[in-house]
Image (cartoon, rainbow, N blue to C red; front, side, top):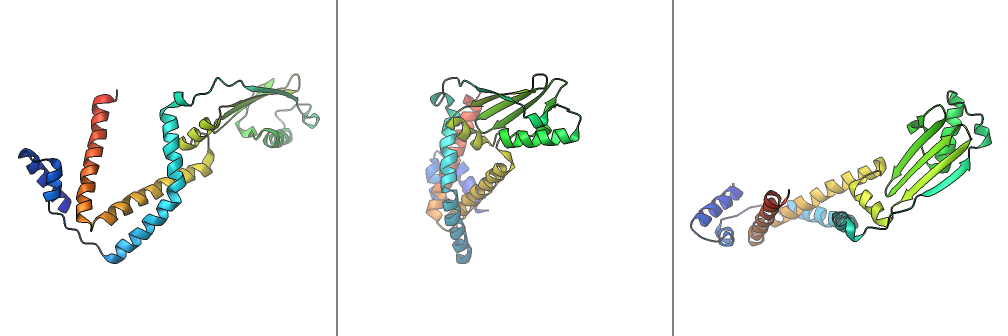
Amino acid sequence: MQLISVLGCIGKADSGGISLRVAFESAPLKLRVSKSSLSFARIIHVYVSMALLLLMLFFAVTGITLNHPNWFSQADQEPKREQVPIPAYLLPVDTQDAQWRLATGHWLKSEWAMDMATADIDEDEISLVSKGPGTYRSLTLDLLDGQAYVETLEYGVVAVVNDLHKGRNTGTAWAWILDLSAVLIILFSLTGAYLLLPQTKRLKKSLLYMVLVSGSCGLVYVYFVP
């Protein structure tokens, strides 16, 4: 109800020619919260902020690298190509044999960190693709000449951290890290806002800044984003 009163006062003030700042400062806003809840919120806010410190810096820096890829672009990377013989114990090749598939899967996992379950199997070749943060690898097993052809691309450190920021090709464990980070950021934001409730002057100014910044972002989106 207090927030509605503030907004109503703002509307009246604007219609009378009074600035938005004056409207916020003159609007009645009295909120009561218990000391115990404030103490609990302060503890959560402090410890969550420390837990998030490096993560927030990471996401802030990688937000810049993502937004300005030309600043950090590298010359076109040349793929690293390798040719190795298929191990003798995997010959002759029999793609229909379960034991052969199992043994080949172990070899692919140990040598190239690739999963046989994702393989595309044809009559004369087996092909696999593996993607990781900032990396791409393709492997082809030529069943006719008994050779394995591997091509690896590494796009550099910036590409790695950008993929970590986006959660692209990072696996389930990193996805949980991103989800946990999001929950902690929500807690950090809500507890910070809660701590402002008994501080009337700061709360009014904070609401003003929130409205101005959010409104500015909305205007940029409406008028400048294609």
